[in-house]
Length: 200
Image 1: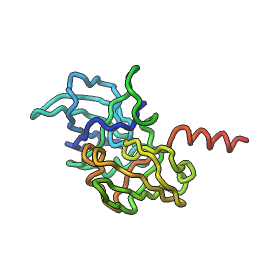
Image 2 (image 1 turned 180 degrees about the vertical axis):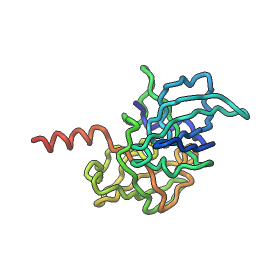
Image 3 (image 1 turned 90 degrees about the horizontal axis):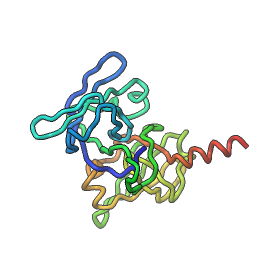
Image 4 (image 1 turned 90 degrees about the vertical axis):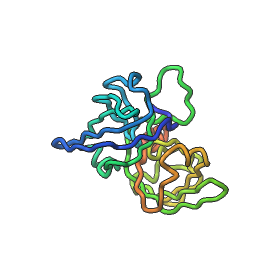
């Protein structure tokens, strides 16, 4: 489990196809000795398992195997050398829950419709896949590229989120532009509430 509070921005160092999966190497600022093989790191939103780790040129690196399901349902298929990714390590007992409960299981790919900068902040309008729009509610939570955000408004498939200067500076969001695709994880509670309503 994660909180959607980004703690580092990683860089894709290599992408190696291996049959139906891709082995991706990501460099980051986490100390190498603190990353265990088998640990989960939310990498650009998806929860991925560390298969190897080390350090080179003053930076830590870790490898993840990205399977066919993840390649199909997320933006991971488009990652290439130089791609920047929001990172978050898995929650530990006693950690502060600063965002909302995030699983790292991506529901689908959304797209940025518009970006409106003002007063150092930016309002993003996002288009969700039609099948996921019903899970998104005003004042509810979403995870976009692993970032916990509050929904400001909803209009059909489109919804808006407001990013403050800190988030724009400390994540990949400052470089995001209209037309970019992003990983969307709907709120866990909204998903279960909808399922319960369907069962009645």
